[in-house]
Image (cartoon, rainbow, N blue to C red; front, top):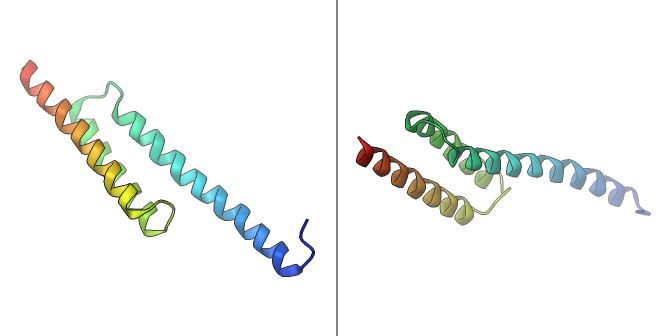
Length: 91
């Protein structure tokens, strides 16, 4: 337990920030998992924009590193393009 007032305040701040960061990270993970589910390609395209937005905002607010956001966007877009190509081959 902290002995100083400033340390107590720092502990309160860290709890709030870690809760907020955890929420953002879990939201990104759930959207990424939803991308890999059996949704129609047009819904995945809309979802792709949401994922991009969440990743960019998380990187801007230093929740995740900017290169991590870039890498995840690249992987998700590669997956989306592969799904789109498969859909085109089927038709």
